[in-house]
Length: 238
Image (cartoon, rainbow, N blue to C red; front, side):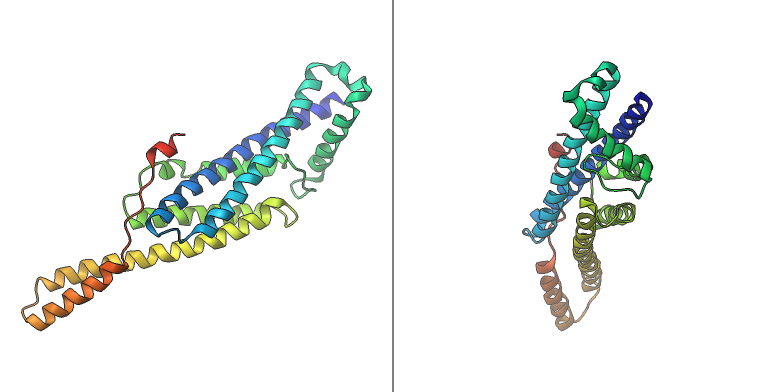
């Protein structure tokens, strides 16, 4: 029995690290969305709502995980608790975790737990390119790369969780919602490139009518250009 509880505790600890990594992902996405909404006049509020749901689910999973981990750790430190009748409901909870652990990585979803194989994959996945996310985004290319990395990570997470898991539909919705942001970023990159080209050509135009046309077209494009989003450094340090 104690060996089983020791294995359960180890699995819960690994899951705890994975939930922490997922929470950090939600926070990074939040920072990006706040910056984008500031520049685009809250165009991406639906993405913000979906990400809030993701962060709430992370909090639920982490809270339940910590409760289960506390129970397992307490019993390991005081083995005589197993014989007490009031501990039986907690042993039943640990039993469901043990059953899921034995099911394998595609086992039954348990709130507060995920199979160690999935936990390790999540930790490795979300620690990739972590430094890139912490640096300042000084161009639309930086923002495009950031959101595409998030989409790639979410796609991998979708593949890890069965449809029955609460995370599954949230990951799908969030990944799809980020597509519209990537599309808007792409449009801004095109406008910026076209403006740069027009300004260069307008300096070389000799005819007044052509120069006026270039200026008019430039003004139209400038109205479509939004300010480059800026990440709040103070928020990142919280």
